[in-house]
Image (cartoon, rainbow, N blue to C red; front, top):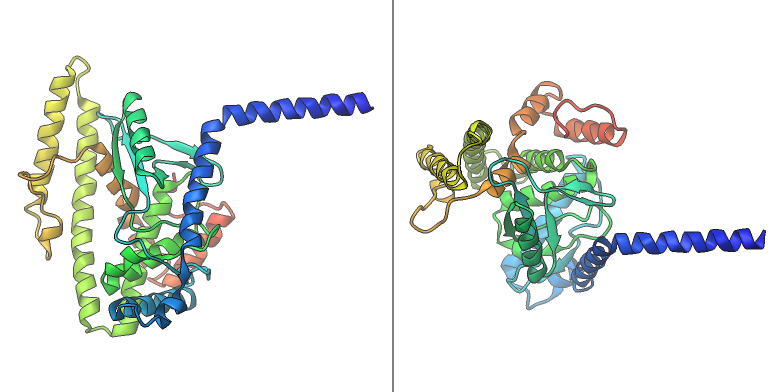
Amino acid sequence: MRKLFRRTLKLLLVLALIAIIWNFRLIAYGIGQLNGQLKIILGSVPVEEVLQNPDTDNAYKKKLKLISEIRRFATDSLGLTDTDNYTTFYDQHQKPLMWVVTGCRPYSLEAKKWHFPVIGEVSYKGFFKEELAKEEAAKIRKEGFVSDIYSPSAWSTLGYFKDPILSGMLKRSPGRLAELIIHESTHATCYIESSVDFNENFATFTGEQGAAIFLKSKYGSDSEELRNYLNFLHDEKLYTTYMNKASQRLDSLYKSMPEHLSIKEKATMKFNFIAGILLEQNRLPFRAPEKYLFDFSRNSLPDNTEFMAFLRYRKNQDQFQKVFDTLYQSDFRKFITDISAKAKRNEPLPFPVR
């Protein structure tokens, strides 16, 4: 019996060692991410301390108090999960904290995917060190992907840690700040493993709808805050409608490219097509066009990664709006409560998930 136990123990140790070696990169990455997240958490201070500090800028104090109101409204009025998120503050000192790598095939709207425990398969990979993000971007380029690196203004740890308020958030207008807090809080309320497009599109929709409801409740229907935000939503809807169609056209171009074309010929077709998309975009009747106008003299053309980033966050907005208006009669609390409950029970949802 003892020999059998020893042999079994040795076998388990060997298997464990093989698993560690096989997953060394993933384990090393996880340790690095945990270390980076802990540095932010340990460097954060309670919001109350910041508010009581006489050296804190009054504009900062005003935004911090506003975030507390948004948090409470999101829980009490909108039905989002009550967490300890955004009760602490971290000063970024005007520096980025995270760098996110994305990738896409050069002649297909096929995103590079990474797989992680708990969250499943996602189309981005974050790093707390810029040099590691650059190494990952170079690695996937060798695999045949085009790559992009960007720094997010916020992210959700899905309730595993207490997400702090980042100082960079406080530069936002009341509407955009409410949208961000509600967007990230949605991830802590409803998250489906390996369904990044659903998770981000859903949070985009709830963030925008919830922000408008909050602004109306706090400032009033005729307020400048609400009016400015509704103008922003008007432009976002116009942009979303256009870019959804443009992305479909770009995808059709890639699928119709003759196989005999050289890489140079494909690149020329792609360049001209994307340039045409941007020229049309510049003619759209935006209320605040400066955000959407593409300056050909200063910027290089966007690549597939930017089209995929748009689709990741906005491609299903019309479907969410239709379900919200028809099935839930624009009742936000009923909408978020029912959808999150169905997601947790793995029940079918009335819009695309995968």
